[in-house]
Image 1: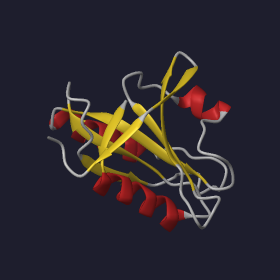
Image 2: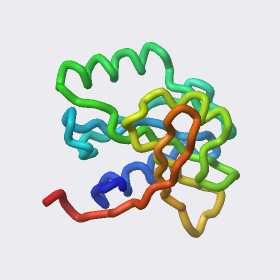
Image 3: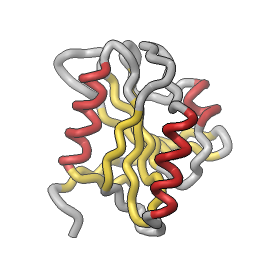
Image 4: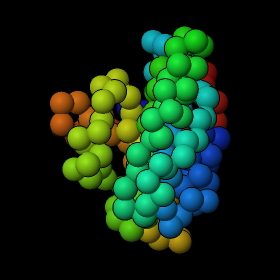
Length: 138
């Protein structure tokens, strides 16, 4: 189960809406070993595409090095789908390289709602998990 603050959910959704019609992407870092998402890190979609996302390799290197320096890990890796449901594509699954991360997908296909779903992706196997949205971490 992913437990995440409503403030972070709002930031992820806002980023996805702002980058629409292109896919948005980024991470939420948290203290190593905590499984607690804390620090929102929006990233640039190097593809600038409505159907595909890729972290810029230099930006990813910088962000991952910064997390290492702060004793953090990527607790959440998120991106948006602009025309399809919030479910990992074959490409998303092939790129999933952090077995401990929660892979969050939001869909901006509808203007009325923005589905927010989380998955674990390990060795190509996708498992949807419950998302618990909290006001603060107790």
